[in-house]
Length: 324
Image (cartoon, rainbow, N blue to C red; front, side, top):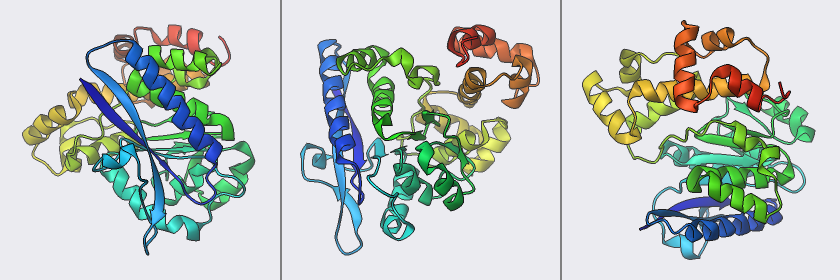
């Protein structure tokens, strides 16, 4: 049986069409490689394009194969832009729509100047994001609450993903292929496009891709809160309080929606943060354990090894950007 995953590309004014068509081709090639694997239960990426229509200029699906879909897409992607980033007045019609899509479980992703439109929603406030280095000063002035890091080519924060330069749509596209079709198909696709995955950052990021399209708003609210806070407070009482549910009800609904216990889910979020700190920084492992919420470094090492298959020191030696 083939399952379809919809990736919507938002055609806002000034969107770079070369990136749009390039992503369509990249996902098409990835589907071909996925089909060649011959697995009974496969995923197919369906690309939709969203254009502004009507008096309120709210984006709707363009006519095409993906127009048969109902509900929110799995991913909404904001491509790079040609010229200046979208100003606030032109971004306004998209803002509430993007917020509502995110609330429904859609992952939001941006490339280069598309991060300006994403930041207009307020969803990046207090969170890390990247954009093109040449746009950094303008971005910081316009969105001082965002933790901008233009040294990073791609930042995967689970429900929100941002990529830097104009050609980083290839990195983002491969990241999504890896997420939905798996690393083998991603590598096949990268080779086809003559892109070297080991030279790209996507292999250094956490492979934890939580289910955000389960349709349970109380659980989704908790998932967003855990992502924003790094899951440092993983107590059942706090999680249930954020969900507005009785503890036993919350446990049952969380497991049904995510396929994980709250403890395992929180551990995976913490390990994802630890991976980035091991890769990009020089902080001691015991200090990293404390930063991501573990008072016992030994417990952190055990959890990290169970989830990644590597000890923290091994992970740093293998994937650290300084090679050491």
